[in-house]
Image (tube, rainbow, N blue to C red; front, side):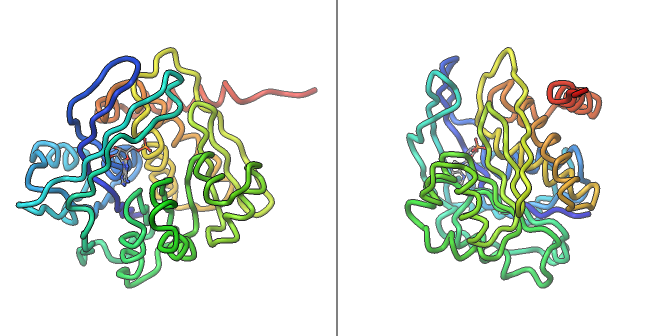
Length: 305
Ligand code: AMP
């Protein structure tokens, strides 16, 4: 089944307790499409970059089977730039700089060949843009998943609430779930957020795993305790890409299959954090992914007599 991803393609500058990077390639849609490329062959991208974005990186996405027809290049514009600094625990971070640049007035054009997509991943970007994409699809996809962040809850809450009414699945982290719902208990938060539109909700808890909510059902997926975590940037997006890529590949959106998808998503996130930026995600094999998924199975299964 085909997947369409919309979201930021960016330059990031990162600071972790292990070091600092100058501008490297990042962006939600970059991580999502790279992670999804290990599962789905029809991997379409709608995003915008400036004339300063390296052609080689577009080539790298294409080598991973990502269709970049929908990647607009504004020759005289600047690519979205984000800079963040991680705390000692590597689980929390501060945004230092967000420069929307070409993303601010992005008019997402959907190529004709992307119409009819069964799976839509609205990666983190301006909520009004996310909504426009849904409106511009002639047929409603089988599953619409949306990722967002605290920034939009603070500066574009009405737009965010309006797009939430149209989506099937929302992924946010625990801090954002509390901010959006005003509830500390994640169970109460989930109920309130699902009443805003999405019937399914994933709350990510960084190195403590992720919770999947749907109606009265809850599933918990652990994160793999890793010996070394270099850079958590993109973990949430790699998770989303692995999750929806697996759903698209299996064409099954049942709760049971979402449980498997969450493990594949967690596996992709665990690879992402092992190196800076997209470095680890671009060089994976199916064998490595399957072996990692087995580690999750071992980590979380037990028998009770
Ligand atoms: P994650 O670590 O999965 O939450 O995602 C990190 C990526 O999100 C980085 O590569 C950033 O470029 C991108 N990002 C950060 N802030 C924003 C924003 N306001 N809008 C869109 N993308 C963003």
